[in-house]
Image (tube, rainbow, N blue to C red; front, side):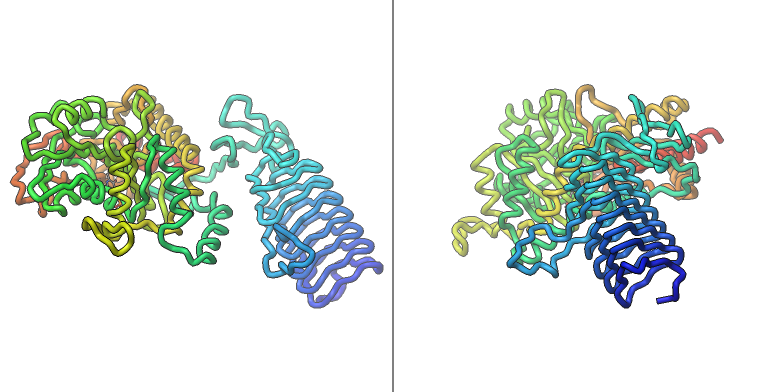
Length: 570
Ligand SMILES: *Cc1c(COP(=O)(O)O)cnc(C)c1O
């Protein structure tokens, strides 16, 4: 310890070793325990205990009668009001030692905690948040939030200077006292407007999303690892129940990927070599790939120009006596027109399997959800999908109990009971870790979807305002549908130059998809030729996806709009 660049009243104890910064004052009857680290210019009141290993930043002010327990970290400029309480064990029992189960409580820069408030351990207290006197905090507090009551609820927002912000009906506001500006992202998040120039935006920022859910995810990962129960099991059952309800289906069967969801759905309808399946040539490869893997024949039908989805008016002429099923794809997050597709399917006794890999939660004008309309619906939880796992996973949903039972068997090599096989299936199981993660993420999905929709609305509005409606084919929105925007796709006749311009400005973009599936080399044997699917072929030459992810900031969106507008203004 350095000598006396700080003050400790003679009635207080400071154990060794510990670090105390210059200018810090420790008043009467307090106890700083070993390995505590206290920054510069802190003020520690009367009757305060700082437990071993606690870390306090600079300029932390602690009022009288506060115990800062092991596991607590206070960043710079934190204010702890008189007699406020931290805890560090979730489930204390006098007779059980839980010293190795202390949970961390992080109080971020500038937060103020009122007199007598209680902070349950394991929660983050956001930057410049404000916890009212007597509040009981049971979950993470967002930056700038004003939280009161028991359990603590967000009732407003506070400027970093400590003045309450008034958003009225706008998403932007300015502090009436210091003039700092803020933007509301949703009802649980605001940010300070930065006038620093944004200079890059990725196409997708999964790290930004993880930062918002880490606290919920981490303990669940630990639970699964502790249980050592990795394949199927209760976490999978829980997720299946939630996804079935979310997609208006009575059954959901978790599988190993979106591709396997499609494959197992085709196996469930006994697709045989030589059978034909009608689908779109403008999709991710897997849609047609699974048909070919079962030695059946993909038969392509062109798409609608504005929605990129299967054109129902072209389906009937592609039906033959070998046709067994139709796979419409709800591309980019908007449902294909299911009414005419189902009508044709019923007339010809065909199965309909919805490729809803990009469309979980999307709805048609009647409010029917993707996956619930056809005989089966297939979801992908690939990390870049709207509901993404930490690896590969997928799900089949259905309202047909017979198909559900078959899918459950096929998922485990076709056996029932174990080791007795009536049919040949495969290993198509989803693992418990993915299910546990997805179950938590599903609770956020609607909030994320709303942010994606808001981003899309703003893009459309701004591009129109800037007179680019003709230059950029904006997404064709079907009236009354719920588009969930897995991708926001523009089209441009100068796409390659536009891509170069965006790359030069560090904006992520991607072509979904640069070639039609019918033109893929591996499908040369199907003998399709250029010109067979003119709408899809033109789309493949013109489409371009730009960032739409929920965590995009206002400044990032403005940067993207300005950069694209700049390209056309040249
Ligand atoms: C992602 C995707 C798939 C495949 O899902 P995976 O989980 O990656 O196997 C299938 N179809 C479409 C339309 C997709 O976007």
